[in-house]
Image (cartoon, rainbow, N blue to C red; front, side, top):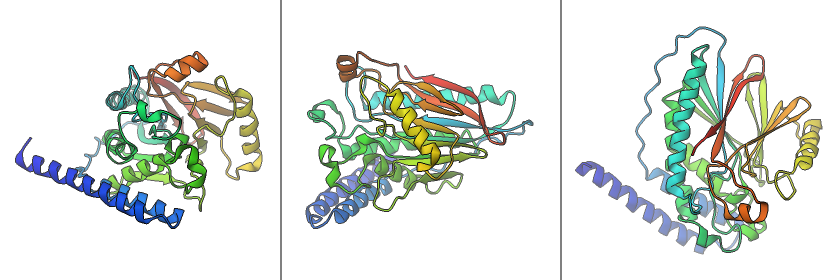
Length: 342
């Protein structure tokens, strides 16, 4: 590392420490209203993000292929960044997202042998962070504070992935919703402002860090005083309703009946925006469910060991994330993959 790099790193670390100290002062002073608390949290997140310096992404080589173009779609969810198990931690999460990026490039090259694939859409559907106070004893099962999850490790991993995608595709579009593990106060989250969500702060930090990249677009719902729990992603004639999945009530695994009931209600007009498919995570099991003309897809998780799931559900899964290719003019999926990350 050069002297200039060392000075830059030291300056960034000092800025991060100053941001944390400022956040603590702001939080102490922001006891009057929940709105002031939210503003204090977002100010700290923004200060931390601006302390990082990211060089511009080189453009990919122009794709001269002929044929009917398709669009790649990668689904990111349930990284549970910060979680510590016998085979999983923040470092393993970072390694697996790098592996995901490499496999997306390889699988896209296979598709490009037949037709152009110049664009990528990223469905970020929550629980990218593990949180701190979601369940009793969680503080003993994490290797990074919520601050590091949303302002240091999370932005580094997510922006790293998006930068690799920007070097692979002409244009990248992100659609993002919040997960339940992003709740700041865990069991007391009903007392918090709905915007106080770790996933949302992570998205906003990554969004600000990559703001100079004009080939990147980001869609995040901005409900007035409500949780960013769903958004309808549109790719030409294709669309998908994105949500985290904790909206489906049930136990002992994926609640099939609950999914069918709610998806039907949403499609019948409870959600005004029309959609052709549905994407969710939360259950950590890559699964596809056909509901008449709507395909509901459950995304996998990057974690490889979950003691709670083994004990309570007798379930464990391989780490994975989803990838598919969409023909936007016809509005249908042409190919899809479960990308294994172990």
